Length: 336
Image (cartoon, rainbow, N blue to C red; front, side):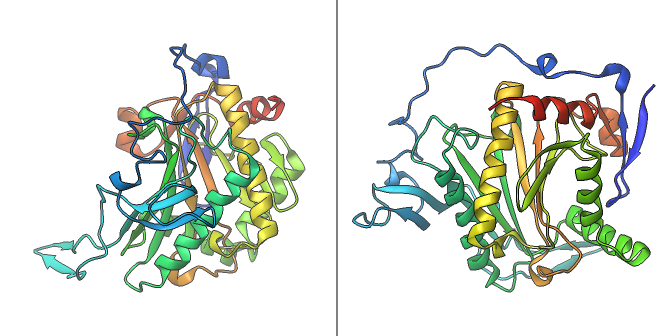
């Protein structure tokens, strides 16, 4: 029989359709054999094509190289087709009963590596660390603009997940508003704290480490798990064990541990599910409250293995055909 489960933070319900339960091999598809090139001269993100992108706003490169030229390991540029722009004023206004404002914000692309053929599951440790440091550096720089209220870091992998270019990259979007999903999480955390006088994320981590059925891996500073009310097959979260509401304030030891667990989690998923399309998002506190005592920033990884249909769209209640306990066991048992 199927089961309804409630998210302890957002209070959203999901349906676990156990009678439809699927294993990793049910999601695998045969992929055409394509020779992967470390460098594609036609790719605008590849080294040597720096003149085909907007100027870099950040780069990690060799000491003798020049900005916007060769010799880089990572570059951050403004998105050529940006959803938002830093130029102009907000001009918030009412349109009869509606609210509107100018599309003020930032939209940046993190070109994670000069190797065209790899993704974050196959990076070495140093490359993953570079990506994380770039996220932190750009967050701190963008936060200085007081118009910006939330900074979202995300990665789309695969066409189904919205990636338009094959070269490994992620994106940063800063908005003058706080997304409703983030408000919902902050509110849920606050309500839980007022009711139980405890941190909900600390309780989740303590429970999952004790029960272990949804635990994927852990290290000194972080834990990787499949959430109790997973919305989709193999949804996985990585959370810091200690109170930390904003990822950008990690020290080098925390960055080291986060890079380690992120890389291993992604490699397990890559191996277990045959390099699935996925989205990952860093969920962090809003800019003006990014030092909350009862919030844990975290990364949510969602493989795109199923497609939301009419019921999900109409009710926001997701049907998950792979219980998180099954998903966690397959990921946990996958050797990498």
